[in-house]
Image (cartoon, rainbow, N blue to C red; front, side, top):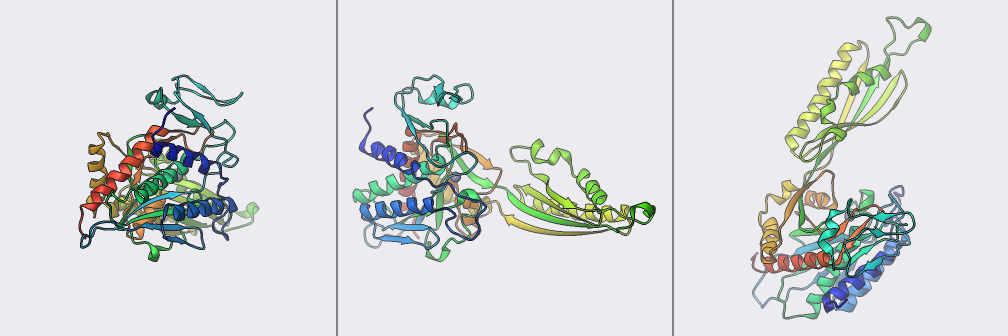
Length: 417
Ligand SMILES: [Zn+2]
């Protein structure tokens, strides 16, 4: 197929990045990045950025890259620095290394045989129909693809290259933020926030065409210790208090209709996640999630009330409870700066692109950035079926995402500081 120079670069870049083994390891806590392959890709990307002519490239000892494309606006004109972020690592749910991408040009609209065993079916992936006659990229059925998030990485790199080679396209200062170990949940733990200048940052880590995410859960982890009164079992009548029994009453009292398995969309939940103990002492961990911070606090209060009730039912037993907010809904930060979302919607309108706002039933690196004071909504990249061997990416949607990035840059050019 004939591609424009930009799309050819985008595809070439994506294929090159997915072939680097960058599976992260959530069990390693004393090394950053957690795996050596991630550093290989970071080094490769750093070299490419310098080849584009970007001189302001900061490579952090923990593997973060913050690269700046200087403003080329006429003197006296100033606009805010904005960031675009992607992560280099891949998940470990299925094998994330030794990826052998398959490029299918002029897709015929039929099921795709990945290998002898696995088929990417149209019935499971109605979105495929959108791409008949176009180019899609799949796996060979043995690994994931790594479009999460190398599609995002390829998009921001291709745009940076285009801008650095076309000085006629005017823009303010732009930061490319490239991270490691996102899939381990601790991707932002060592983020060099003092080096970052972005007023806001767009993560390119979403999936299907048009999807935008600006909200994630508020999350609390509550640890509960049930202290019983141990006694010889043969003479326990009226004397022993069993902490295991106390814990089961506590768990059974949690509202079943507000569990992860009974909720979706904007509903929050209680989840008894982990338990271990003996008659003397039982330790329970409960995860609480809610999009509304006040309702999350109400859930914490409910658990505290329940702890008192259990103490009253099992006289002599004690219940200790400790709660901790682990991350907050990034929308709290985004809503303070309406222009952050406006830039996306204005840009999409120019592209005649319909957007679909989705809430994230989890946390993201964007949520961590928001806590550091940088609003960070998430944009689509054209990948599908993340963390699975059925992962695939649509080249035309990667291109649309790149066009949206350019539109967002154009929007911010018109905002004065
Ligand atoms: Zn991701």
